[in-house]
Image (cartoon, rainbow, N blue to C red; front, side, top):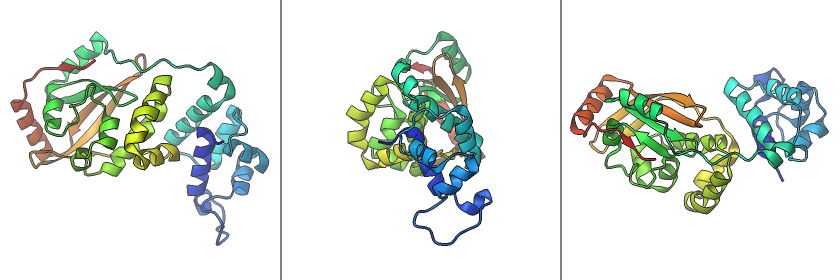
Length: 278
């Protein structure tokens, strides 16, 4: 049985072309990407040891080995961080003793004060599962009529994968779906597993499970929205981590003048009240 760490290494090896890491192209190969022999040689480990890691038979590679594999694959900084994270949650010792608490749904008063200061901007507080815990009034106006805030509690991940309206609201639905599935790796907990198994996987199907298991780091560009009013909006996102709570404060900024004008109109139509869902 494989592990998240082994799955990620194997996926990156399959998607890495030899010439991209300075190796000659040896012509047709039975499998795509980098051969296990080449990756092992570049990392300075045996082919047998690399096979054990990829197949989940070795769950505790040292930090030196993990870093050597990252170097051999020429991973970007974000990919290196993900590789180290997967090594942490894959290890036998960690699996036995690491029992993270369920994600917090309470938003601290100081965070609520910060959110209040962002009015009339567009901002939300969310946890790693995609639960929207609090939001500004303009965010509510922006998503009105889309169904995103209809659930109790509203959850972006569930909305993206199970609500048909999401594909119309997000014109770049594929990219948004990639982001939501990947972010769940940052929220390991018993509650997360129960939520995935009992609710999300049966409803979302292969669109979700395929993304969850391939470990591809998403490219987070501007967020495009098809607003029910008929306007296409383009927003830049700034995410501020709240590590003490394992939450994020996400601020959405208009990326062009037409979006800024539409957001201003939506704000004038909204009630102007901050909303805490938790």
